[in-house]
Amino acid sequence: MKDALVIIPTYNEKENISNIIHAVFDLEKDFDVLIVEDNSPDGTAEIVKSLMEKFEDRLFILERKGKLGLGTAYIAGFKWALERQYDYIFEMDADFSHNPKDLERLYHATAIDKADVSVGSRYITGVNVVNWPMGRVLMSYFASYYVRLITRLKIKDTTAGFVCWTRRVLETIDLDRVRFVGYAFQIEMKYTAVKLGFEVAEVPIIFTDRTEGESKMNKSIFREAIFGVMELRFRGLLGMIKPVKTL
Image (cartoon, rainbow, N blue to C red):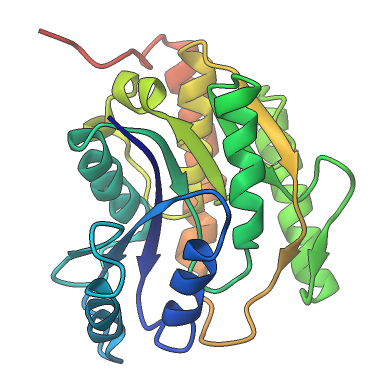
């Protein structure tokens, strides 16, 4: 059995990738790191590979043929982690919008406090976002409110991308049936976990917008989230969210 794996999807993150890897490995708690790399033209993969000898058996890379979407990157990472029997599997951005030190707090919420899923939440204690323009803060906050209104989820930060999943949750969710790729992916995963009876705990964090590299947010991702939420609600009402079939 292996303990904890941090999955970091990357596309054009050469300014951040070395620093974020070192920051994770500098923590008191031991985490392994899997980079899911979408063929970045800026040389991100080469930087990761140059560090793999230094961090042998702790740093890994999963290379894909192109930019295939955040959701599919995490699904690929989840499957990789489950095959290797990790007990705690994390989602985290490469750009330091998520503070690596908070990994230990998310780990504590699952490994010690026994939540099935822990979420690094921007909104559980108000609005804890740094360096976002007010328009984006309001859009994100009310998007989460809209999701709660439609889905009846009690999670304050439904679009959060800083998450710790226990292995039993990811083994229960039918990962091949997860449909969405952008922020709707984050909502779908949390909604599915709750529908399958798992406990989700929110851990307050401060989210800091990236200072290096470019945001991957676009209108199609936002549109998917808006309409995907309604689809999720219908699937839930029709009883279409079921655990993975086991032999």
